[in-house]
Amino acid sequence: MSTLVEVSKLSVHFTLRGGALSRLTGRGSAVVRAVDGVDLTLRRGEVLGLVGESGSGKTTLGRALLGLVPATAGSIRFDGTELAGLPERRIRPLRRRMQMVFQDPHAALNPAMDLGTAIGHPLKIHKLTSGEAETRTRVLEALELVGLAPAERYYSAYPSDLSGGQKQRAVLARAAILDPSLIVADEPVSMLDMSVRARTIELMASLRDRLDLTYVYITHDLATAKLFCDRIAIMYLGRIVEIGSVASIFEQPRHPYTKALLKAVPVPDPSRSAPRDLPRGEIPDASRPPAGCAFHPRCPVAFEPCGWTGRDLRAHLEDRWTRLGASAYEQESRVFADFPDLEFSPVGDVVVAPGRLHTASDVLTVLNDARADAPDDPLWRGVTSMSVRDGKVVVGFASPVEPRLLPSPGGSGHVACHLHHPS
Image (cartoon, rainbow, N blue to C red; front, side, top):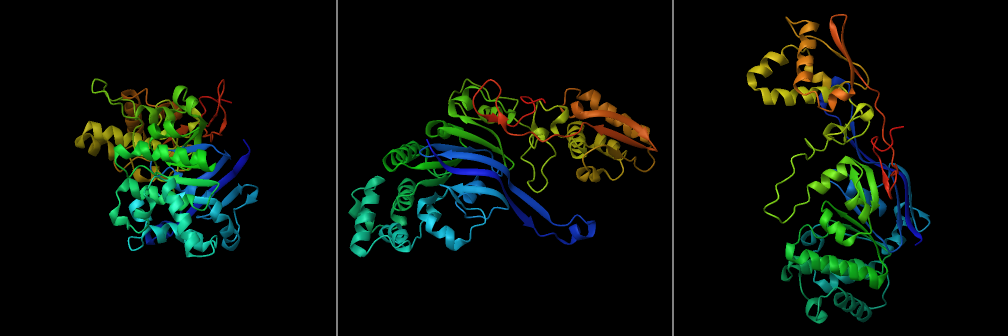
């Protein structure tokens, strides 16, 4: 199959305006790295699934592919035409070949517009029909195509007359009426009842075969991705951490995050207990991503080069104190001076100062106790040394290394993980 879309080093960043506190502290405005250096190739006729938690950058990447959000850096080539940096007036002629199906079909349709008008509107915008009669004929054909039959009945219907599944069919008709090459479907079945999800997926697969469509299927649901997709790209905090065929992702997952997502897929078996080794914590703030591998604070098998810093040490101690109780928190937290500053510590050795009426030896004692209580915690694999220097404790960390998306050893696909590319 030939290439339809080629993405290289694509980044989409959003600047957050700094408030009074950020100006006082000198930290300035934050930048949300919604998409951060993505490389991707999409072949004609295939279905590529973008899978990840909320906040992983799936929707932003999908919108960037259609030019709906500007690229901060990198390249997007659609059928040989560079979209990144292209002015809107030059992207507009390509819109008919690139369509999007949004997550919420209730919000995607104008409640004051009947289906005949809503579905025929793109034809008028792109001047593809010569009159009302031709437009009506094309709309009726599109309604029949997506299973809204008899089409005459639905032509004059309003969104309020339709069920959720019927609304999503109408949205698919509106996207398909322009005879596009690419459809980006953003969680197209997540707002639908379970009973209609499979039928909607079957409809999308049918449209793919009949209209020679290429899909980018955005979802957090690996179960529907397995049914519909040819390849799956796992996204985490703006980056693709693993990509491969559906078979390789499900049968031989490589990245710890991919394995965690698969373990979280519900199984309709009341005798099977839920796994206990799911990732800890939540997805980090995209404006301050962790150093090295962004998944390392939640990864049970992270080790030295994964990117440990002072913020990880702080998170470890805070987790320890929630388990020890309030009195232990009061006692141990007073040992540290300016403990919150660990959250903003740079990469490299971290200097930890003792609190009032305490010494560096007290700090070192708490750190050693924390290490002894949880020696298998991945954090301690990244700590290379702890020593007293000039009345403070210096905690040494291994140098962080950002993993690159490289071919999976001994298998198909690509993975960005130091476990598989130790060099």
